[in-house]
Length: 541
Image (cartoon, rainbow, N blue to C red; front, side):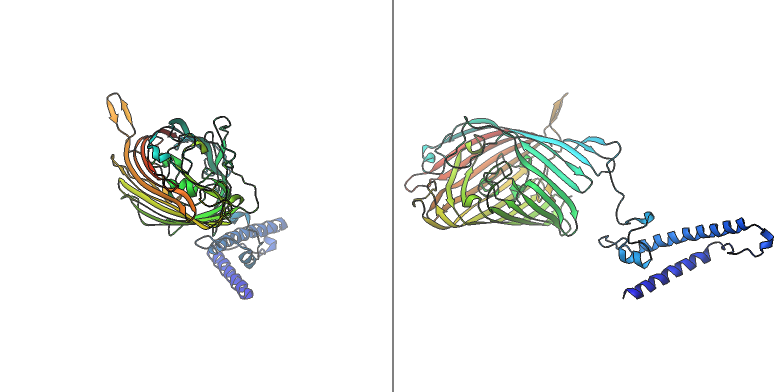
């Protein structure tokens, strides 16, 4: 098969060579017609050298043309290969004049970099192959609580300090550096300087006396883009791909806190970040995304875990059957799942509301306590939409913990060591948001989540000119059920009303009122209502 290809290629080269020679100026004679007329042997050599140089130039042009004709349109299999180079009787590497026609010239970032503002300070190389972005965020919260006495009864953690105490604290204070090196490698380094309390066990509680806000990593990863057949490979500390609200940055949340699902399933005890490896890409002409990763199933906020096994495989797939950027119409649907080998073969589900303390010092509203389990499975369903100034989102996540056995701290009427079977817990929420000033919620197609709000007019009140910024109303209903068979961690329902004022794309003020209906985890003990009010001043760059 290769012989006739070589003959065909040779015939093509010969034909092209012949036609070019016919169309070119007549070649100089190889031998002078009359040596006596010249009488100069040097002249004969010069004539031969000139003809040879001209033929070499023509041959180079023909080779370049033939190399280009072998390129594939998509570039996946194009360019010079050892096979077609051999057909031309050439080396298996490309000639210098046509080295790898499918590849752009190497970019080294040299030259004068530009400095600009892209919601943060950003430096970019002239060839766009290198970029450095310096940013950060601060979220300063004030929280007030009040509740009926009956709401504090029973198990679930709320009876412990500081339960209904008011608080003022920084919810987040982070610095980050993001960017690109050599065009196809991205990086992100971010550390949180507050909220770094870590509870390893029930007997090792953090208190104000022993809590130290040491820096803790959040997003800390390197990713490789444009990998054929895969897309992007990310390695490091990152979010696991489960949940719509979990995928969104805390800079762009609709409320001061995410729903119960975040604390229970998406980011329990690790601040929402896990060390691991993840691949992801878009599909269906950017209408969909898929994510798949393997992670170390740890229980701390410092990006590490030690233990045999204790891995998790988590995936998410999304699709937007409706996406009209100009008319601000979006419909998003998604599924997610996770198979997990629990950390130290134990599980615990607990959830909080407005934070009146950092880390585990915040009030716990529902809590199963710790129990042993061999495997955990999670599944999630999500939907979101945008229609002009109106937007909505809703999610459900369920968890199944197999071969569960109660421990001394388990919220159960059964004695320690009692088999609990497969423990099922779940939660869900639905929320709606509306811009009074006419903006529309941005949908991030790469991340499959809501993005930054950009007001039509930034807030300004100067020299008699008043511009309001963007104003948004929001409402959420959510619930979680931590009761199953002999396990009773409590039942919660929440009603959250919020007002968001976006002064500009980087600054916002949030007001939240949260009414929590708590059913006691103990029979014969009434629950009650818990009222919370929070206010946040947030800034990011």
